[in-house]
Image (cartoon, rainbow, N blue to C red; front, side, top):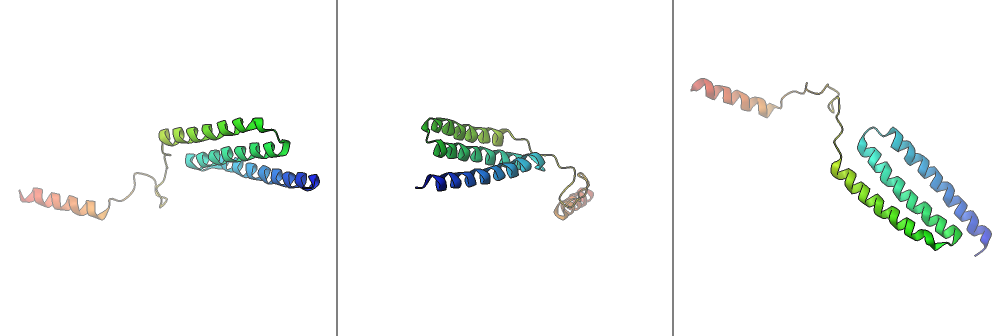
Length: 123
C-alpha cells in the first residue's frame, strides 16, 4: 500500500475521532440528567479505545494493546458500578409540567376511596 494514502486515511480517521470526541464531550457537559452523562462517558471510553487502536495502527507498536484492554475492562466495570449505585434524578415537575405533588389522584383511587367511605358510613 502506498504510504501516503495510508497516512492520509489515518489522518482523516483521526479528524473524525476528534469531532466525535468533541460532540460526546459537549453531551457530557450539557446532559440534562445523569443518565445522559453516563451514556456519554461510555461513549468516551469507547472512543478512547478506538483512538488507542488507531495509534497502534499508525505506529505499528503493539505494546499499547494491553492499555487498550485495561481501558475496556475499566470502562465496563465503571459502567456497572455507576448503573448499580446511580440515584435517580429528582424532577421538579411531572411530565405534564405541573409542580410535583400537585398531580391529581387517579380515578380508580378516587372511586376506591369513595367506596371505602360509603362502606364506612353503612356500618
